[in-house]
Amino acid sequence: MNLVQDKLDVKSKKRANLFNWRGQFTPEFAEYIISSSRLESNALIADPFAGSGTVLIESAVKGFSSVGYEINPAAYQMACFYKYSTLNIAERNELLYTIESKLSQVLSNLNGQKVFVDLPDYRASYKGLIDVSKTLKSISNNETLP
Image 1 (cartoon, helix red, strand yellow):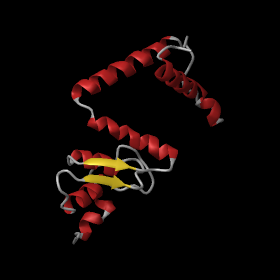
Image 2 (cartoon, helix red, strand yellow; image 1 turned 60 degrees about the horizontal axis):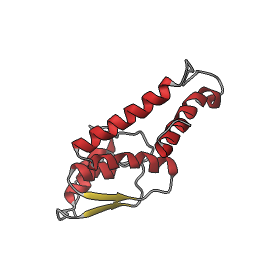
Image 3 (tube, helix red, strand yellow; image 1 turned 60 degrees about the vertical axis):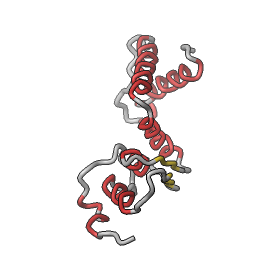
Image 4 (tube, one colour; image 1 turned 45 degrees about the vertical axis):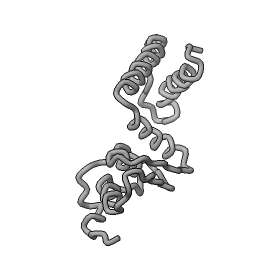
């Protein structure tokens, strides 16, 4: 495979990644590599270092199935976001409705509690957000408020 050096230059990036992640490929770079690989239409693209999922989303944009592997838990969670690109419009609408319903359930029980407070101790600043996240996770697992 012969690659054009200009296409490998990350300084000429025109599109941004969905998540800012150090060391990630640009969307253009991933798209270029996928397009240059002359893959068959039924090819499965494997990304052993999925990071924030740029290769996964560019694979989906190009119509390829993909699988990503990641050992960093934070990067893994970001990359999981891209599984939603495989949902059809009805499934996406159902997912959005479910999220809205669960979020409304949690927010109605805050009783004026702030989700974020700007404090010198970042742990204290994000305590409310972490509590809301835990409640949302509990709802997702149990389908009811704790």
